[in-house]
Amino acid sequence: MKYAWDIKMTQLSSVIVGELSFTVVTLLT
Image 1 (cartoon, rainbow, N blue to C red):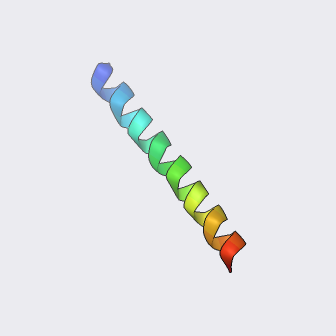
Image 2: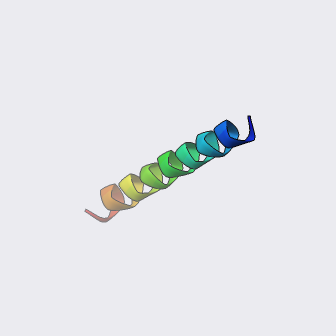
Image 3: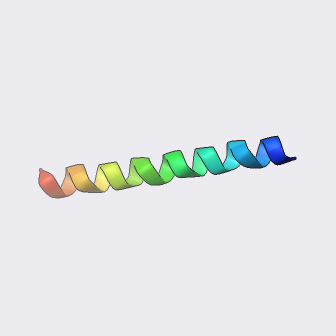
C-alpha cells in the first residue's frame, strides 16, 4: 500500500511540475 501511495504521489508531482512548466512557457512566449 505504501509503495502504491509513493507512486501516486510521484505521478501527481510530475503532473504539477509539467503544468507549471507549461504555464511558464506560455507566459514567456
